[in-house]
Length: 80
Image (cartoon, rainbow, N blue to C red; front, side, top):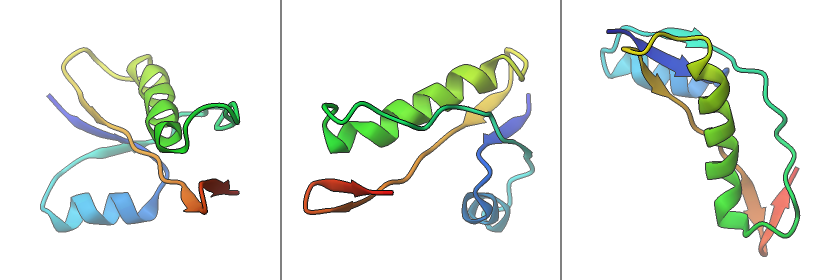
């Protein structure tokens, strides 16, 4: 069993390393665009789920896969 960080974020990688985890980094290529009708709070979850779907094709069934996404919001609008 391996830990896989499915993110290109240097900060997430540093957090895991600082916590003492040994892990592999992959960066799944996903479309991070979203429908403007989706509630702002749901967007990071949807993008993270899309990353997970791609990452699963790159990992084994026993891997622990960590995905995440972050958005910056100002007055209910996601800042690009």
